[in-house]
Length: 180
Image (cartoon, rainbow, N blue to C red; front, side, top):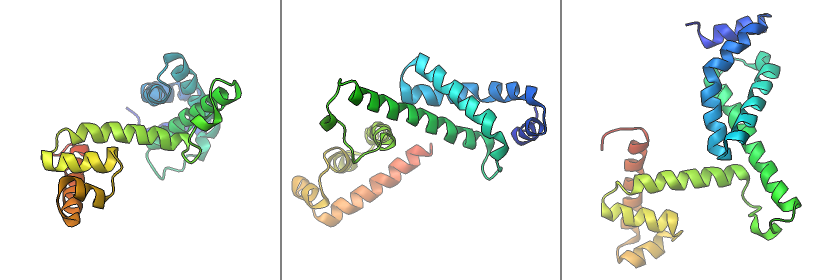
């Protein structure tokens, strides 16, 4: 199979029919990103189409600083998050929501990433030893300070710091798929 960068060069050089190959290679991944954000097949299809339109328009701007798949992923995530922003604005403008219901200090990206991070952290946390699990839960999900956690668990603040540090290391290894 031809490398992605070679395919891009051929398309830029004028072989526009090769763009179909690019779509074939990346359609599933782009759709997956779009669906993850939109949670709706129809919307994910629309977002996917927008991504490939954007790619067609801006393919000549691909510099090769990252892999093509990374570049396409960034475009897909950007389009999907734009979609989310429009949804939030639409809810507010249509009067279905109250302006006070939307936390303006957080962008849609922050909200989405925060939700995904919490889900992932919760899954990793469940695999931790109980002493670490307690600290992670209190810190990340109860938003307690180190001092509050120390008081709750009746341990020193330094103990809380070290347990949280070790828990983060374990969770990072889990994220990389390493054995514990």
